[in-house]
Length: 146
Image (cartoon, rainbow, N blue to C red; front, side):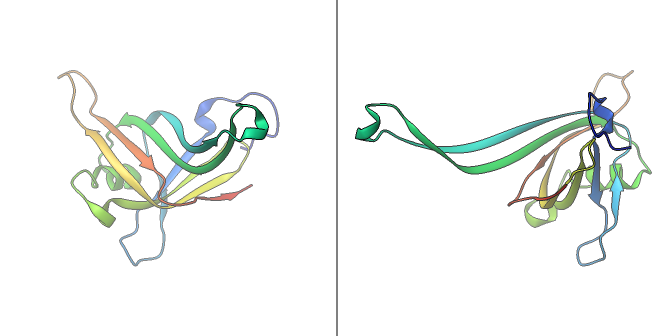
């Protein structure tokens, strides 16, 4: 359900990953049992100090990247969860997948060929439920559809 105004619970953000093999038709699947995520924007800002501004800085935002850190539980048998977990040993282009982030207001951000950096699959205390933790790193400019 899209939120048109007001506050909202974070679970209304949704993530899907392309589970299709390279060269096949996209098959976007949710990633089951994810519990939390955080987003960081790495912005490149160019700065200069022209004489006419009497020492005050001028700035221009010239670069951007996005990192989304996701954590939850490893769910063997879920298509999206298995897809992410299966990337733990991949390098190069083999670690790239298309990812969609749907905001509570219905906006969809599509990250083509996002780098999936798996940071934990199943480690923890003996009584813990096995985790799945990973990062989605933008790889070029995403497509935003309001």
